[in-house]
Length: 187
Image (cartoon, rainbow, N blue to C red):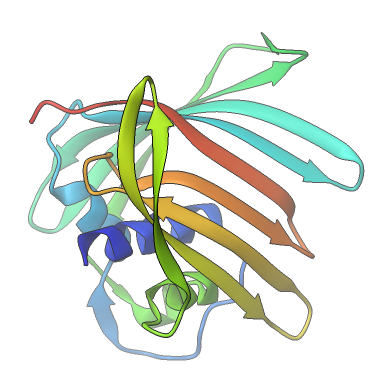
C-alpha cells in the first residue's frame, strides 16, 4: 500500500503537466505520505532523460528530505544538466514544502490512474547502486481531450520518495525516462 502511495506521489511531481480532476475534497497527499516515513538527510538521486520534438536533455536530480512535521515535509532538489555526459552548468537548487493534505482537484489524473486498483501492476527486481530491490510497477494510461499519457512507474518502500524508475510517453510532454542510481537512508 505504501508503495502505491509513493508511486502516486512521485508521479504527481513528475507529471504535473496533466490536467487536474474535477473534485473538491481534501485528501491525504500521496507525496507527503511517501516522504514522511523517512528521516531528514535521506535522499535519492536519479538520471533523467527527456525527449521531445527531436531534442534530448539529460539531468541528474537529487532530492533530499530536509524536514518532516505533522503538516508537511520539506525536500530540497538539486538538478544538474548534462551535455555529452558532462555537466553543463552549476546545479539548480530548490526547496519544496509538500503539505500533508491537498484538495483532490490538485491530484494529477495520472496519479489517480496509478492508484486505481484496476490498473495493471506487477513485481520486478531492479538494481540501484549495486543493490537489488524488489519493486512494484504500475502501468498508467490516461487519455484526455488534448493529450495521452502512457507509462510505467516502479516503486519500493525502502527508497526515499518511493519511485525507483519512471518511463512516461506523453503526447504533450514527450518521453521521460528516470532511473534511480543511488539512495541514502539513515534507518
